[in-house]
Structures are given as C-alpha cells and as structure tokens.
Length: 158
Image (cartoon, rainbow, N blue to C red; front, top):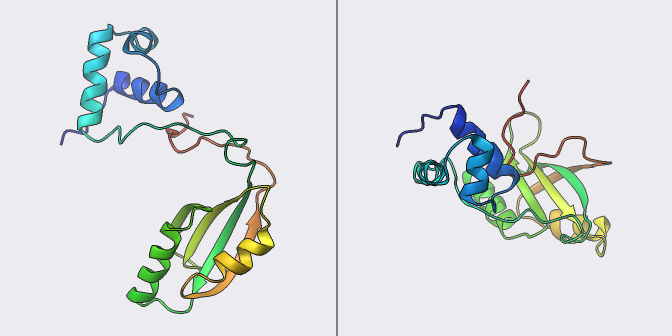
C-alpha cells in the first residue's frame, strides 16, 4: 500500500474533510486539477486507505443539543478480561461518542454526549457506573468548544 502524499493530495483531503459531497469538478477547481484527474486522485486515496469512508457531520441540534462530558475511568484491575468486558460494553453504549485507552493515572477517557432530554445524574448512575469493571469515575463538563475539528479534521497548519 503506497501512502505517499503530495501537496495536491493534502489539499484534496482538506477539501473533502470540510465537504465530502462536492463534485469532482468543484473539487478539481479548488485544488487545481481537471475533474478526471481529481477523480483518479480521490480513487487512489480511497484505495490506499487514506480516505476510510464518507459520512454526514450531524449538527448539535440533530444530536439533541447534547452536553459534552469527559469521564476519566479507572478500572478495578488491569486484567485482560476486565478491559475486554469494559471495552465491549462501551462500544454498545450510544451515549459514548469516543473512548480512549490511556496511559497515566486513569485507564480510559470517555467522551459522552448527553442529550438535553436526559440527565447526567441518570447517565452516571445507570450507564457509566454500571459498566463492568468500573472502580472510579472522574467527570469533567465541557463549557464550550474552542477548537472542534470534528472527526474528519486534518492537523491544523502553523
């Protein structure tokens, strides 16, 4: 799998990250290529796995205007079965938008989105504390997002 990218590939990725629904013609105009050359480049980026797929970025309103909550989770132990049970459970929980195995003082960092129609108290008691293997939860509420590149964001340029 050839993962070499040039400046045009990076421009294509940036354009598609901000609007994946644009036509090859419009994308080509924005990156300086013909529609057919643009289409070939995009196909190559897909085939090499640099473009993993396409999807809609839903607005906060479409997601129920959720509160964003970050939860540091410490498990009862580090055994493989404990971690596997926990990870299997969080992948089935729709309120968990992201989950990361961490180094440091806690085991996982979860990003949960709690819709306005729900309460964090209920989610904490009935969902998060009920996950298998949980020993301790430390919660941080996001006041507002300062930089939110979303799931498709490329690293910001200096």
